[in-house]
Structure formats: structure tokens, C-alpha cells
Image (tube, rainbow over all chains, first blue to last red; front, side, top):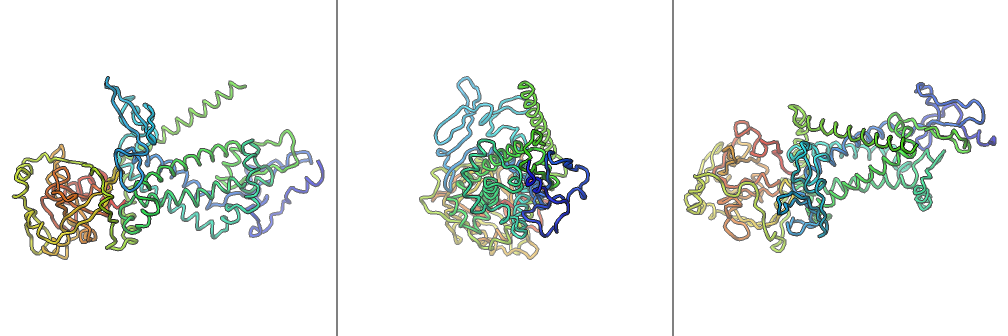
Length: 323
Length: 255
């Protein structure tokens, strides 16, 4: 190890907090949070670890409100969907022309089957879609099964209550987060990709596929794929889910007829709402996977209390992996 | 080592499943509690106020062309009221049917079907959105509710228009609904007596049904027998302003 590597360890004096760049507040933490003090390097061969303050309080709050809202919105949404488990394009629901339907059919012997039809192709999805078991083990006509809906059994009125309440929480949370990100410059500093980020996108994709995730200083900021994923959710999926939800409202359609034109009709909006819902589910699945493979506890703690540690590059010893 | 890993993975999956089921059971328990649905229901007031705030009072629901109409307009809810009095009226093509308009009005009145047909009418091709999620488009013809209200002259204390219907459920409770004056005076709010240029059939609510184009289908009462103007909804039905409202659905069904 050379001396130049040692020089990269941050000095213990904290700079002015206004002065911190990229939301990083180097090693002022131990005085504030003495409980989990990082290992102090005793000699130049010990792993060098630096703490940064990764997520501000508003970001963390907004994140956990989303954690509460998203599963509830998805599952109460599936409850609502189950009241008419079919999707269409255009303004109307022509029953003979759904693009997706979760049907229930009875065989000649009276056996109940769940049939999922997508663009005219049918699949037997008994037990999962179209027909599935209730908590007593009895098989019933049902779009999505009880264990992915809120409430678990068919109860449209209550599903709507959950959905429309948490929709407000989710939307207000999103608007507050957007406002905060704009004013605090979290948006342009951390979220919107820089041109140089975008130029490195090919390498970033390859690295991710090979599970080579950014380490050291590179891990202190979002990489280009993270930036694209987060801005895609904030500026893409978020507005889409809100606007398609609004388009399903006959009241708002009267106030903003342009919504119907934008999405090609109320039933198209309902279909897009459904697809975007599963895009959210996909995002969360990938997000959780990435959180797990890039240092579960480090990531989790940084979203809980803000602290995130970074192993300095160059100290590539066997004990570098501290998570 | 590999076995240990698999055990650990299985443990994680099982734990996640257990936590998930517990959360789901918790949501079910909250749904059945006395207090929690009330908190969830508070969103309805917010939705109504915000929608009313950003929607001009006379903002019109989109109207479509003849070609946009559904080939089949689905029937829903009650499609043939299990009510002997109604069946007698139906047998006679509702010639003896009379719509009573009473309550907090200066001049209570009765209207026969032919009298209603002689009043100014409006025809509109609109989209019907069911709370279940489907939509259908049809052409409706009827008398704007405002025409009737102008004739009976609501008292200043009147705040809601209540529709008493002929169709009972299994327990004998007749359907009813209510709207406020913002909606009652809206130009597209009709007492419809025709669908797609045909006399309104029984399955769609003969002799008249409500059209309330900026709200969901369950607000649009069928088989209307009596209209009552009131200052509050407490004394009617279960007190929530409508048959489905008493089962937990929102009174403001604009979304």
C-alpha cells in the first residue's frame, strides 16, 4: 500500500456542513452517533472506512411513507380490479374484446378452473388467477388470490377505502418529495444523470450484470442506472399512476377532458394504471435485490438513520468486505 | 455449506411469508374494526372538496358520437324489481305511474310519465362508469332534473335531493340515493326515460332512472317512484345517503 492511499482517508475535522458536496458529511458522525463507531485504523494496513451522511431526513421520511403506501395501494388495487377482472383499450369495456381477463369456468364435471386470457391466448391458471383457494381452502371464483389483496376476501367498498385514502398519502408524499428535491437541489445534484453518467451507461450495465457494483468513492453517489431508475419512477411511473388514476374518475374527466384524450379513453387509462402498477412492483423487486447484494445492512441503515460507510479503494485486503 | 445456504434461503422465504400473512391479517382486522374504516373514509371528504374546488360547477362530462355507443349496454344491480306494486304499474306500461316530488319544496307536485315527456328534454351520449371498473356508452334522453326543481321550487333549507326507488333487496330494503344541489342543477343530470332511442326497458330502470354523468353508476338510481328534498340524510335508510353508501361505499362517487 502506498502513502497516497492513506491520504484519501478523510480528516477527522468536519468541514462546514453548508460546504459539503454531494450530500456527504465526512466523519463528523462519531460525535453525534457514538454507538456504532467505525473501526479506527490502527496502522496503514487496516481497512480504511469512511462514514458519510447519505440520506437526509426528508428523503428518508418520503422513502418510508412510500414503503407503507405502495404495498397497500397495489394490494387494494388488486382488490378493486377483482370486481371486474378484465382490461380493455379505448373508452368502453366491450365484454367480448378484453385484452386481458381472469375468467372462471366450470368444466363438464362441475370442476372450477381459472383461465387467464391475454391478447386472445388462454392459460389455465387455476389456484393463482381466475380461481383460487380462500383461507378455508375452498376454491372460488377470484381474479387475484386472497393473499395479494386488501382486504383478503372480496370486499370492493373496503378495498376502495384503503386505496383512495393511501392514494392521497402517496400523492402528497410524492409532491412534498418533489418540492424538497427541487429546493434542496437533491434533484440536480443526486438524481438527474449528468452527461458523463450517461456516456458510461454501457459500462454500468455490463458491470451490473457481472455483479461488479461501485465501491469506494463511487459508491458515495448514485450510479447512472440508479439515477435512471429513480428519476424514471419519480418522473415517469409516479405521474403516470396518478394521471391514469385521475382519468378513471368521471368527476375529474369532466374537469379535465384532456386526460381522456391523453390516455385514449377511460378503459385504456385503467389498463395503463394496471401496467404501471406492475412496473412499480418490478422496480421494488429489483430495488430490494440490489439493496441486498450491495450491502444489505449498510444500505438499510443509511435509509434508516442516514449513515452509510464506504470502504476506501486501495485497501483491498481480505477483510475489506465488512458487510 | 450449500445445504446451509438453502436452509437459510428457505428460512428467509418462510419468514417473509409469515410476516406478510401477519400484515395481511392485520389489514383484515383493521378493515373490520369500529374505528379504522372511518379514518380511511375521511379521504372521501377531501376528494369531494378538492374535486369540487378544481371542477367548474357546470363542467360537462364528455359526450360521444353514435358510433361510440356500446353494442350491448350491460344491466346491473336489480333488473326486475321484486315488488308487486311495481309489477302492476309495469303491466300497464306505467300509465298509472306518478312521480311524486315533495319534501322541502314550495309546491309539491306529481308528474305522470307523459307529463315528464312533454317537459323540455335533453339527449346525450355519455359514458357510464361502474364502481366495478367497466364502462359503457349509451344515448340517453330525459328531462333535466333542474326543470322539475324549478317547478316545485325548493325551500332555502333544502340541501339534498333524495330518490326513492321501487326495487327492494332480499331483505325488503328499497333502493334509494341522494345528490346535492351542485349535481341536481347540472345540465347533464337527467331523469332519463329513453336509452338508445328506445323506451327505457325495465332492466335499465323503467319508467325513469337518474343520469348523473360526473359520478359512478351506483348513484344513478333506477325505478324512481318519489323524489324528496331534505336538509339532511340522517333519517333516510341507514343514514349515509344511499343504499350502497349504507354498505360502505362513498356518498361522493366522483372517483
